[in-house]
Image (tube, rainbow, N blue to C red):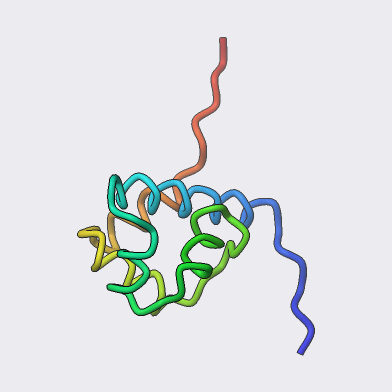
Length: 87
């Protein structure tokens, strides 16, 4: 199976998802959160750093639950276009 390259928008969305998850994780260790979400710490690290820009929906849903985020909240943060300055 050949995977198409990600678009710049998908890459940016993946980076926003990673930032949101890192912020929500706070002081908890990556290992602790990954264990609770039943994903590998390596998978969580790749998502948080944007290396996996399009993780499976079930992975996002489980991480959101573990981190106390609603899927609506995740979608709102991740799908929002970055603010641009017009100064």
